[in-house]
Length: 314
Image (cartoon, rainbow, N blue to C red):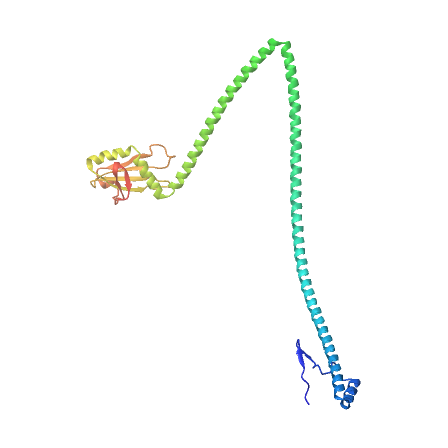
């Protein structure tokens, strides 16, 4: 005969109601079964009912014990979860305590800084108080001196009047001298500012003139603003518009050379030096002729524009 069927509860095998709880039958139960076989059916059924009730009671006790064990395990797991939460809370509180300690140290450092600043201000205040006391003392001495002078003036009013008028004259002279010196200082300051502006402008001009293209344009502008342009315009009224060639002369700071050629024969060359440090005349006639033997023919690269002003480019 095979094994009797068993119920499985919570993953564990449970015995049948008619099966002994411990998996074995004691001698008393065996004796009862043997007697039952020879007894009346009603007595046998009564004994079996009593045994079934006993098995149910044991099963219920086992179930209660398992439930208690499950509750204990759940309580333990909940306790472990609570402990973990408490550990996290403790870690958070420790971090918070570290932050508070760092904030306390920072506040302490700032307080020490404030205390040092207050101490410095107190020392400065004490020094100011000392200066005020010294000035008060000097004022008292001055008041005493004035009182003595007043007493002396009262005893000798005529001498005091003379001294006062002399002092007033000296004060007026000092005030006039001071005004004159202030005017001189203002004039000198204005002169210094003007010279500084001129120096900056000259430096800026030197930087611009270091570029050959800028130097050539500056020379053309200088020629256009000179009296020599009027001479060129007068000759152009007679001979017509000239061909114009502009270039830089040789040297470290060369002037601009403007060569005008009329009818391919008559020519004039003007030099225009844009350097402001050069002595006048800064624009002058460098050469002229009635034929081209004294000048190297060069293609025109400029022209005479409106108003007789030389313009770079054709």
